[in-house]
Image 1 (cartoon, helix red, strand yellow):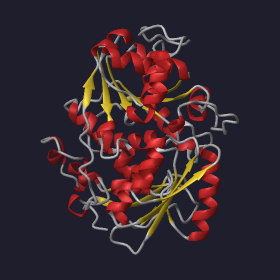
Image 2 (image 1 turned 120 degrees about the vertical axis):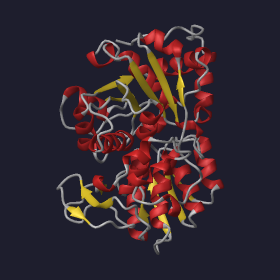
Image 3 (image 1 turned 45 degrees about the vertical axis):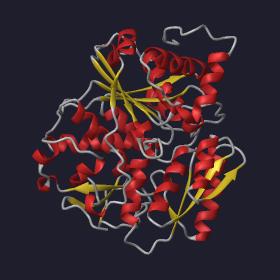
Image 4 (image 1 turned 90 degrees about the vertical axis):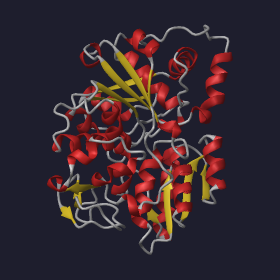
Length: 403
């Protein structure tokens, strides 16, 4: 791997042990904790970061493990921040933006993480990669594996959305549809991939997915003239998105580009919310016994690294919040009909959770809020339109708090 000058090595998030930078790194060899890339911040040219807006996320390669010149890329990054004045008015804040990750190559924020991951692996003798996925991550991994001439093995639950399953096939990956829910796919993946010796790309199985996803916060700050918003809303399943954004915030603080972090609002569906509930109760994360949400992309009932994720939210004075399926569907319809923005159902869970948390101090005092749209609404179009056509639907009601 052609590493950036500032990439110093790998650091375990559990035991704190430092390790040499390795393209094929998975988890900590000392304790099996999740690894992250560490940086020599003194070697970073801050003016180079702040004086221009990069055309892709690789413009921030000083803070990535791999250089832009060695990237296996499809021009990912630089997704738009779309101002939503109607939603801002309803929430009672001055500015509300949607960071729209639908406009990435495969229509999901996951493209960022896999671009960095396969860029690291491209110079190694790894031939096969594998991961479990609720849907979109499998498609994204398949696309980037194809571009890097790797064979991908994807394990998705039978309830994963059709587009993600179909396009995983189209990218010539080995698609394994597992009967049941995501945790069933995880078990089959674990049993099969370990025996086969495939390189793991599951959430937190490689430090490089985190490294790529954190570029979202760099772009948000760049779009806001290097001023942190008050709140960033993150729809969450495994916790990788939230933890990656937190690592990006730490980078920005270490470089002196921001002082106080934005409060992170971790949003989950009401009927599968192990991370949000743990944050609210300030208790350890426990497995969600009976997950039952139509938002399949966020239905991760037993996240692997729950503690570092909840600690990250607490470190930003953030909160956990939830949203019901029907209110989230209604909010997706409302935003499309008013501000014109199409949200994937995960993004709608984020926006509805924000409305549900509007009475908290973090939201009540906020002036500028950014909500992450995780991916393309096309994946959930049938669900969203079905709600629009249901007899329960009151045409375009204003989103309100469920509490």
